[in-house]
Length: 162
Image 1 (cartoon, one colour):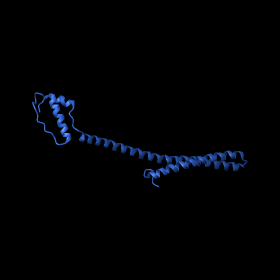
Image 2 (cartoon, rainbow, N blue to C red):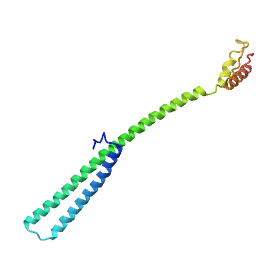
Image 3 (cartoon, rainbow, N blue to C red):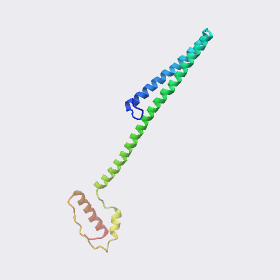
Image 4 (cartoon, helix red, strand yellow):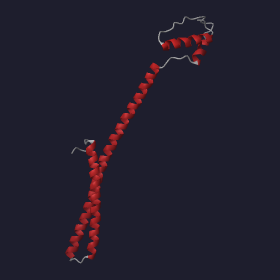
């Protein structure tokens, strides 16, 4: 199997799943060893049997604790890698979304209809007397025709002849 950094998502999922399962079995081993140790208290054994029983039960408890820690740490590393990959993917998608928003705004500006705002009309009024009249040529597209009409109305409102 590959290391955690090079493992596939399925391999990482398998590590997490098996690690949790094996850590559970190790916890069960600890409980079984503690029960065996409690039973040994009530059983008459020779001094050597008591020592052997204590050694075996303590060894099982130690093995269970080690196994629980080992498999938990292994699962934790795999979960950390899965989380790191998820956060990286989220960051990439957020960057893509931000770029798409910028691109969309650029496209909106390109395709937005031109309009004559009240500010434009006020600026045109400052030209009254400076520019006596203008020649307005209407475009061929619908949008340019509307814009030409809006400009014509703005010039009339500003007092500039057409």
